[in-house]
Length: 380
Image (tube, rainbow, N blue to C red):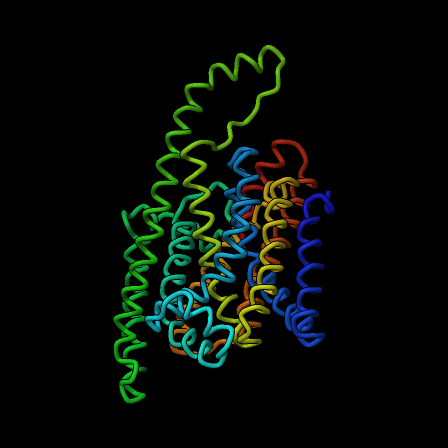
């Protein structure tokens, strides 16, 4: 099972590391290996959230996610995206930007650094909306009950997530503007850039997430109409199969996954510049890491890990919230990528440990009555 799920990742790792040796020797090999580990550590929460969405899709769309989706993730976000942001920020053509990336790496890194505020604002707002919508939703299973219960009550207020996100964006833009003026005003226009980029991230979330939700609701209506037929099949002794997302619903969910992956990859792409400004090594290292994230996503779905360890999804969303704040803070301050990665690892590790303890409580309680008692005491 492990070889089947991670086989392509192992193959890409071998090819990527060999290519690195041919390209720049053992030093390049080391850089690519470090970048791969960086990407995996920063994106584990991405895999958990992806798995929660992917398990709703049918086998066809899961395969699309692993084929076309991985091309978008590896080549689009890890190779094309850094070139595009340089082309846009420096008003260069795509060919000029590629030439710059290959021939003048210091200037290329400088342009990417200049574009960081807009990237951080867009990605930060998109991820912040995911986190806010999660914590304001009333869920049957709660991890941090003392926090999630009052937040679920607040979540009944319409558009609360968008309002809070806009307030956070406004504070970020004003803070960055003040910082820019303190340095002679050379980046005085960055506050406006942060504001516009953040609003673009918010709009992207609302449009893609809204369309995904709309078609998912349509699918649920179809499920209700098929409910009687399914019950009849179950009474006849036939297994009852869960309806998976397909058609337009799955397409927009797939689109949502790709935008989500793009937002997650921002910190990895920017963080990679702390290690190297060679676009080839960056693409190899981050591409290998992206493959493992995809394989891990499929593994979580096929093994039913999210169903067995019910707090993992909570931990991943808290990690998303932390990453969103980190991205917005990096508009003004530099934060080490190790710290960013460790925040996610600690939160997901804590949620996993809480899930294990919950499973032990359920096993000790035994039976449905014991399960209900354990559920009541599970939100710590």
